[in-house]
Image 1 (cartoon, rainbow, N blue to C red):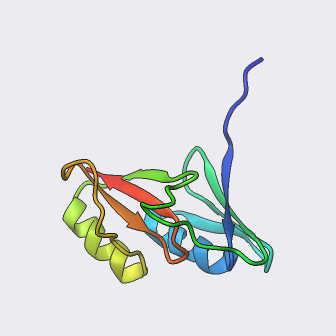
Image 2: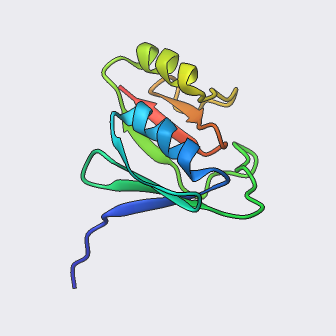
Length: 115
């Protein structure tokens, strides 16, 4: 049996807002948007965001991350400026000795960007 990953779905308090953030961050397009689910398409794998009542932010690094996205940018400094302007945060804890930057999205999900 062979399977293919077509989407990654992330729990969220506000799917529409999180989809808008990732659409801007990745250059993708919001393809579905309602109060309970939103999605972004822009590559081989789409991102989905499902509303979860009582959503609790991940704790980074103390609580770890259940799943995090790995993104790539041509210019890491420019990506840092653009992503923080969109609402991402840069936590104090930064493993990797400068090879990548750990961010958290507006709902606290960690994601990494490398050059």
